[in-house]
Length: 417
Image (cartoon, rainbow, N blue to C red; front, side, top):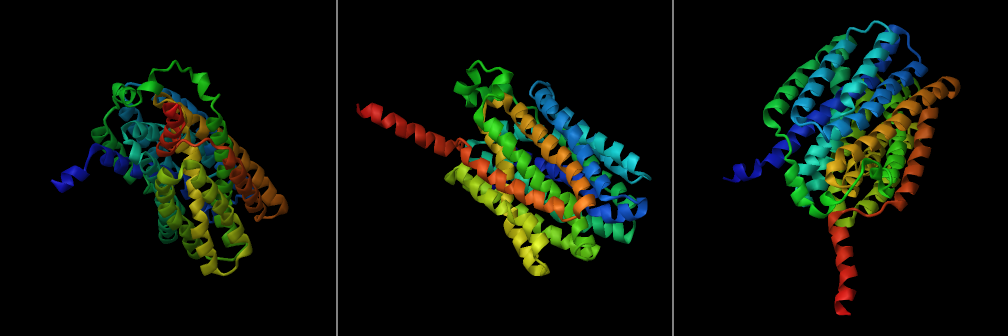
């Protein structure tokens, strides 16, 4: 009976989306860890490395909001999700067939198209199916922890090991296996959310007349877009240029580099769900501020620290910055608008954030790296982290416990009168 009580549909959904989101980031980030090998094979420069990161972010920035908008309206969310997972698995495999920069660039564009809608869709479905006391944990765990475990821990270690023992082409071929399994599990196990359920859960919000354009009028949505754009600038500069910087500038081996990058991932996996969980009590804003401050450590650690153990320790601590990433990307947007617009709110935040932090940032930083050195993108990343921290001061609190407490305090004086 104990196992049956634990294995609720909510918990099942968390597990399925944990692996789904994780595999999205495994595929997305794999090329960054393989770039030292790919560049040696195909003769690519830093500008082209930035363009490969920008290509995926460009189409992701369009398909994210569009996919979020569509996912709020389609009848079968699970079918759409299963098809998208199947599609990006095929495209990931095709990376292994690439023999030129142009082919890689086109594949990155295609991958962004099919991956963009996945995050808004998984997060909006989970927001509908989560209990209030679990929402912060569920969204943080499936978004941040899975991202960290698969994209920042397993990807550098597994993908580099596969490429070292075989070659980088084979490493991409093998990524199709978990994608096929996930697509099948989603189609068989995920249920389409019942609209009546979340209308009943949030009667006041859901019955208000609320136009799509009103999503953009909310202060928290614009702040989320700004903060997420800045933290994306920091994260993408670190993840795209960090591995090559460690190999080319610091002289680390591919294997040592993979473990240094994985140290960030270990912390990301822990803090990715811990900080959103703590924010249920402390509030979203204080949690965003603390994690935003620690985010600044990440780019500075690999530039100014030469001791590998100390660098790994600082990256682990800096990974607590994952809190502000998850807060600005999904948790605060979801709690700032009626739930029927949650897919659009997340999609807009991710889409514009990807356009600025994921598309423009890698292109500019790639050119800067060729002109001024591979360390330049990391200084840009540090500056963006400082700005993200400052903008976090202006968030309006959305944590249910804090909002309810504030409302109760406002009601008490009027009752006494």
